[in-house]
Image 1 (tube, rainbow, N blue to C red):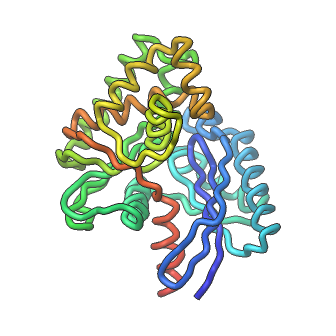
Image 2 (spheres, rainbow, N blue to C red):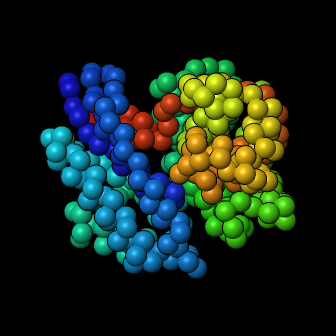
Amino acid sequence: MTLKCGIVDVGSNTMRLSIYQWEGEKFRLLIHKKEMAGLAGYIQDGTMSSEGIECACGVLKQFQEILKNLNVHDMYVFGTAPLRNITNTEAALDVIRSVTGLDVDVLSGAQEAHYSFVGATSCSDMRGSGLLTDIGGGSTELVSYENGVVTSECSLAIGSLSLHTTYVNGLFPTKAERKSIKERIRQELEFSKDAGIACHHLVGVGGTIRAAAKLCDAQVDGESHRRILLASDVKRLYKMLKTGDRNALQHILKTVPDRIHTVVPGLAILKTICKEYEVETISVSTCGVREGYLLEKVMGGQKK
């Protein structure tokens, strides 16, 4: 069986479209498109504004045009933190449905963690015991596993964009703001201390992990193919970028310009997780929540 479909991830910082071709028991990524929608910035007092909902609709219509031009008929959309953590979720979904004709599947934190694990399993060695993290714009998922089976999972109410929005007034956090961010991360990890296990190796999913790899590579030779990071590399990178001086600014703008305001908070989360869980090395997974959703929700549903 050969099937083509689009999977859309409506996140706090980005909205992403991935078009896959399913071939028997395997899939192949054909096209990936990312839009920096910044939906978290449209949320005030727990409510997403009409402008934010319109922004989401506009991006979804763009994605629909792409699929139409490529003659791909099936499009599946799921939402994460920006849609599940607001008080007007149903109203937002109704508007999206009326404007685009699309039904958005809003994932719980546990579901997001689960799909991230399923996706990572498809392209990473998940044998033995270990820990996986998916650092997003509005939430961070932690999954403990043993012999390829999830033993515990949780979603933390912090992400690279939400920390910036909550604690940072400028482009880069000040010393006092970094202290507040650090304390908030520790509080969230304390709430979920039973969700993870101490391990020397971490499987990393999401944009923050990929950005960290690109930034580390750019320091060495400008290439962006690193798949293993040292926790010490992350610590050193954070120390270099946190001040937001001219060198830090240029380094980010040359490598990951779309993450200019979120990379430091994201690295703060990753660095703290490494410290709290005694992590020494980090695998940069090429697959994550979209691939997990494809494998389990879309293709799993068709098989049933």
